[in-house]
Amino acid sequence: MNLVEAKALYPQAKEIAGLISDWTESYNVDEKRPEICIRDTLTGEIVPIATIMPECSYDDRRLMAAAPRLLTATLLLLEAAFAEIRKLKPDEDKKDFAAEVAMKCRGDRRFSDYLMEHHGLQDPSNSERIKTRVRSILAVQSLGELNEDPAAADRWLKLRGDFKAWLRRNR
Image (cartoon, rainbow, N blue to C red; front, side, top):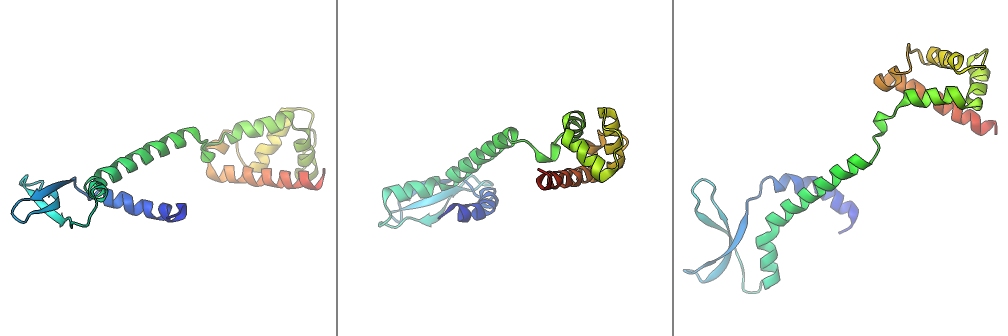
């Protein structure tokens, strides 16, 4: 099995893990054979669900009996690892676009050149004038809207993309 196959099986493993019961190995003294059994949750009775053939090795028997608990434990560990990864990974959807725009307006001379050339910025002498022009281009009253309104954020991302393309052409 490779990683692609394993990823494809993950949803199925999660689904099945919610259905499984705890298995145990037992020995049927009447029929003189080992079995895998479950406990009936309603009656408490031990119920055989599989017969273990004599050819089955000791290690395979151990794996069969432990499979439900091992699957449950593995999925629990995966979910905990995923939660830690999510904590460490920055959420792209929660970028502070308002701060990004403010920094561009305050200290990026090339950004103000781009705005003069493509968006009619008349006076790039101070950052407030640049911010006012950017708010007008993006059709927002305040830069904070870029963090709250997905459409405004999309307009910023498009403007930023156009600026980056302009930079590549005007090195």
